[in-house]
Length: 142
Image (cartoon, rainbow, N blue to C red; front, side):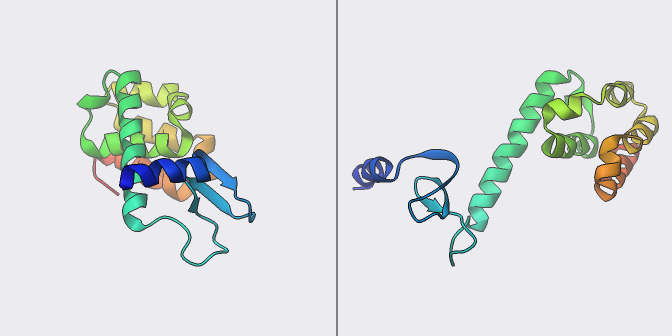
């Protein structure tokens, strides 16, 4: 039954990877998943949010491992800081921090942290930047 119902719902609802407005003007995603906050019960369940987040983290890890040959040699906290930045800025945005990344690659973590705090990113999200710079400097989770 599940296979037939799945095929039927995909046909009747359609499949959208991005948010769209349904026939009643409510935000929807996937196969008829209501995500509009105007409707009670709409949205994602906690396990679905966790699933999406794990996928997003794994995507960033793969991208950074490919783009930065030294990434895997960092301790977990410093890798985490870079993943966090890539999550916010996109991988391409993080890779634009060329001098910071060169310092990290050379093991100059204090200098890299200083560079992080001198960036436009740090002026846009100062609390996050300060935490991640400290994490980069110390190698301890913040």
